Length: 271
Ligand code: 6PG
Image (tube, rainbow, N blue to C red; front, side, top):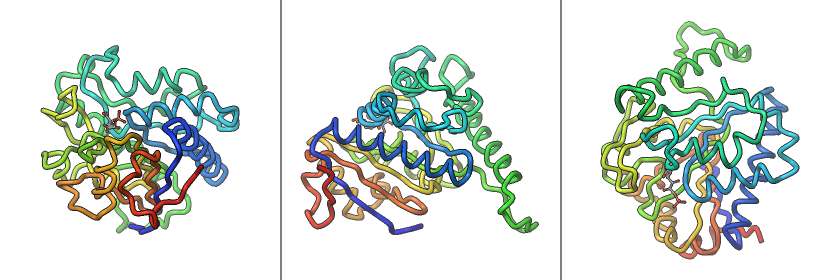
């Protein structure tokens, strides 16, 4: 995994969301020009959803071929489809319903009224990831057709967005809980989440770290301690955010308040 690691501070929540939106539009355009399609993993949370809203309000978003963007989710709440708590529902209202996506490329984590139980939701999403990975692998002309090569179980994620909890959780991986300790699988069911609602579906840390780029977005003074811990190289089980490492790049995109405990030398300022 790369150590290309950058921390950027923004003067306010709004500038952070607008700048992250601009970055994401540019990244999607660059990837699409190289590969024809692009893949982004969305996050719930205040900054993640505000970023989507800003994308829809930016004229630049019209340059993206949204029908060739694959959308996945880092986590979602295991509640009913029409619950306002659904990350998918918030993302759809903020952006996905406003742009010409290909519904087949929008991969929604199952809601509690669409499957029998949480375990089924987890296995369904894992199977959807594996199917996409297989299809991508077979279509990849650049890949050496070596028999020994094993198809990946998750597709290529060009950008994976993560919000940050005040306890340094990412996606629905919470400190010291089973989810952050889970290895060897791509998706995990979370029960008794300290952040309501209690039941969730989440990508595992291994899956998160398979992304080419991870962007952790955080705003507010209540996140400053989590940012400080996350950047101090603490143990990922106690500080999940510190375990997030993109294959090519890891960006921490913060507002001034959330960056308050980051040593000055680390932050670039976008102001
Ligand atoms: C969720 C999110 C979660 C969120 C953080 C930050 O489903 O709750 O995925 O990881 O991004 O808790 O949320 P806020 O920015 O709203 O504090």
